[in-house]
Length: 296
Image 1 (cartoon, one colour):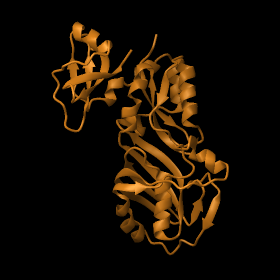
Image 2 (cartoon, one colour):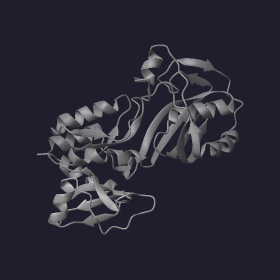
Image 3 (cartoon, rainbow, N blue to C red):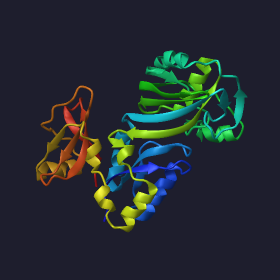
Image 4 (cartoon, rainbow, N blue to C red):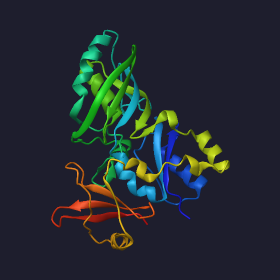
């Protein structure tokens, strides 16, 4: 029997996001397991893991705001833009003052353009950029629009400094570290990274690998599962009768008594028994809600 929900896990540095999925798949016995928002192997922190039907809501988790704590080292550039890469450039950085960095950081806040690193999972002509990079190729990358909502300088111990970054989907903190270094004229790379928050999931309530083992071995792991609709509360919701439930499950567009948000064209449909049965999307051409994700 499928178990549906979301685990707030803490990925340790040195373990890949895929390895966390494999671990939870093995411990839970659930075949459908997926994560929302890959963390680099060298990074640590919040990694929400969806099980069962909850894998259908991964895309909504991926769109949520995230908060990272980044430790950046000035004066050294690497090919991966982080501590795991090979050094490509070194410069003296001890003339850089804290006040310079504080003045610079606001220029990276807002809806800005960012060039993704070569060592990334973005595809180009059917190949991932990191595959091309490891084969010795560097290709031009188009800048992408990203949202950075805030950057706060927490600590200044040159050549290191620490910032907290709140950002949206698709932001590369490694590229941000590189760009800050270029703007300062001395270069920089991401020395370490922790994801503190991913949507509603906070590191303070996250489960380490050891705590996950205890929960599964102790038989209480389902008690720490978050309901899959916990990440969908921003969507309007409707309770439908058995006749309309059948239509929705059969993929029929329906007329729901739901007030459409001007910025959101999704809603939730629940059975009379309180079960989340589908996520529907508004179709203006029909003035109806279409079952886009039937949760079976």
